[in-house]
Image (cartoon, rainbow, N blue to C red; front, side):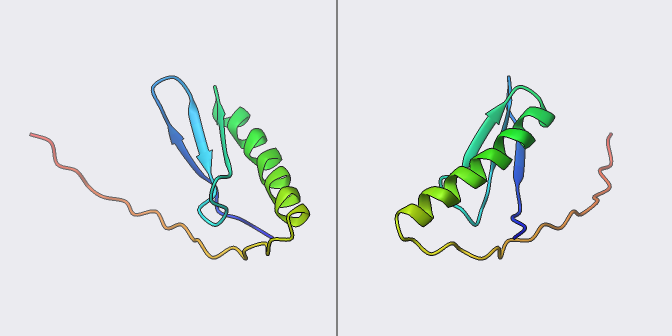
Length: 73
Protein backbone atom coordinates (compact mmCIF):
# COMPACT_ATOMS: atom_id res chain seq x y z
CA UNK A 1 0.00 0.00 0.00
CA UNK A 2 1.08 3.58 -0.58
CA UNK A 3 0.17 6.10 2.11
CA UNK A 4 0.40 9.86 1.74
CA UNK A 5 3.01 11.32 4.10
CA UNK A 6 2.73 14.97 5.09
CA UNK A 7 6.01 16.56 6.16
CA UNK A 8 6.00 19.94 7.87
CA UNK A 9 8.96 22.12 8.84
CA UNK A 10 8.93 23.36 12.40
CA UNK A 11 11.23 25.84 14.11
CA UNK A 12 13.89 23.25 14.95
CA UNK A 13 12.84 20.01 13.25
CA UNK A 14 10.59 18.32 10.72
CA UNK A 15 7.41 16.47 11.58
CA UNK A 16 5.60 13.86 9.52
CA UNK A 17 2.18 12.27 9.76
CA UNK A 18 -0.11 9.99 7.79
CA UNK A 19 -3.66 11.34 7.33
CA UNK A 20 -5.01 7.80 6.80
CA UNK A 21 -3.30 6.42 9.94
CA UNK A 22 -4.27 8.69 12.84
CA UNK A 23 -1.62 8.74 15.53
CA UNK A 24 1.19 7.66 13.22
CA UNK A 25 3.80 10.43 13.50
CA UNK A 26 7.55 10.99 13.44
CA UNK A 27 9.95 13.87 14.10
CA UNK A 28 13.47 14.32 12.76
CA UNK A 29 16.14 16.97 12.44
CA UNK A 30 16.28 16.69 8.63
CA UNK A 31 13.86 15.77 5.86
CA UNK A 32 15.86 12.61 5.16
CA UNK A 33 15.72 11.58 8.82
CA UNK A 34 11.99 12.16 9.17
CA UNK A 35 11.33 10.19 5.95
CA UNK A 36 13.21 7.20 7.34
CA UNK A 37 11.54 7.49 10.74
CA UNK A 38 8.01 7.77 9.34
CA UNK A 39 8.57 4.66 7.20
CA UNK A 40 9.49 2.76 10.37
CA UNK A 41 6.55 4.31 12.21
CA UNK A 42 4.10 3.17 9.54
CA UNK A 43 5.31 -0.43 9.78
CA UNK A 44 5.19 -0.35 13.58
CA UNK A 45 1.73 1.28 13.58
CA UNK A 46 0.28 -1.31 11.20
CA UNK A 47 1.86 -4.19 13.15
CA UNK A 48 0.20 -2.89 16.32
CA UNK A 49 -3.16 -2.56 14.59
CA UNK A 50 -2.93 -6.15 13.33
CA UNK A 51 -1.99 -7.42 16.80
CA UNK A 52 -5.03 -5.61 18.20
CA UNK A 53 -7.29 -7.14 15.53
CA UNK A 54 -8.01 -3.77 13.92
CA UNK A 55 -8.74 -3.29 10.24
CA UNK A 56 -5.95 -1.57 8.35
CA UNK A 57 -7.38 1.49 6.59
CA UNK A 58 -6.88 1.72 2.87
CA UNK A 59 -5.04 4.79 1.67
CA UNK A 60 -7.50 7.45 0.53
CA UNK A 61 -5.61 10.72 0.94
CA UNK A 62 -4.11 12.40 -2.09
CA UNK A 63 -1.93 15.48 -2.54
CA UNK A 64 -2.12 18.23 -5.10
CA UNK A 65 0.29 21.14 -5.37
CA UNK A 66 -0.91 24.50 -6.60
CA UNK A 67 1.47 27.19 -7.80
CA UNK A 68 0.36 30.69 -6.83
CA UNK A 69 1.89 33.90 -8.11
CA UNK A 70 2.37 36.31 -5.24
CA UNK A 71 2.87 39.94 -6.18
CA UNK A 72 5.03 41.92 -3.81
CA UNK A 73 4.94 45.67 -3.45
